[in-house]
Image (cartoon, rainbow, N blue to C red; front, top):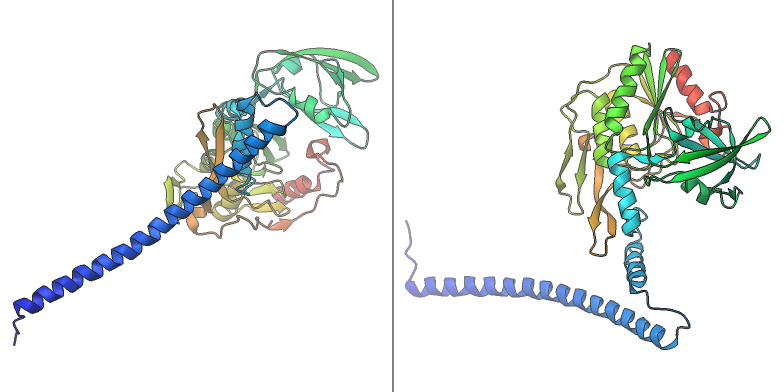
Length: 400
């Protein structure tokens, strides 16, 4: 039988409920307030420290402090460095412009690849791109570069001089080189769009070297694969050794060219709260290429290249040949700043194979066939196919 509740008891229950709700709200509000005050306190201490240093520098520093832009850029860079994440970096305006241009159009330069042979003490041309200013100027693979823009190449400065061979500014670069004991000079021009994909055919085994994952990489990758298959390739070897540049977005586009349309996703990006980051769910939709695959990996295989290797293994049953990868399984995003620069910030964890595969961030990806490089050469481009036992192992496996 239903019992009636008295008016007084009803009022009492309502008051108790309101009181409890108020108490809970006050506790939550206090916690939020404490966190806000703690954040404000920490920021205040940081600003106070910077101001304190500024005053000391202003009073005692024996030098010029008039360049406020340089000081502000250094402060910003120091803040980002303080995050302790090597994949989060500050880019000044010049670096930001170069970085976005690379993502949109790939790498540009005079059209050659080079490597320094420490044993011989020589700066060597390892590859010349067809149709490039370097090719038109007469440069060939194995030419020894002795000077760039009248600066003699040495072991200590070759890296700096190497950078002068790249860029999208339409300016000339003078390259002095030796071939068969004769010294020559090639006048080249920057601005040539260097393909992000190179290919070769070894019998019935196609080989594709991916230099980075940029906006144009997927179309170049597809064209290279189709050309190799038309040429008689019955299997494909993909080389992502020492590849770390590009983005997860563009890596997913390349993966989509080759893997079948499966119910699982290529990858899912999760933010720090475990939620999907900005709808970053990558799917496989294109028609796939069905044949045996192998992927060459090493400790320099990082970021988008690791996603490529992982999905090729798990979706297309590719052999991973080489040694364990770097273990960078995060996604970065660019945030433009008012000073014209930008922050490239780690924003999400990448879950490969639609979350069906364990993440490789911090642990790397183990090869299915471990092959340690025999050569002591610092640069893979200095090796012949026979000397590169990781590549030769892959070719032999795919040909059999």
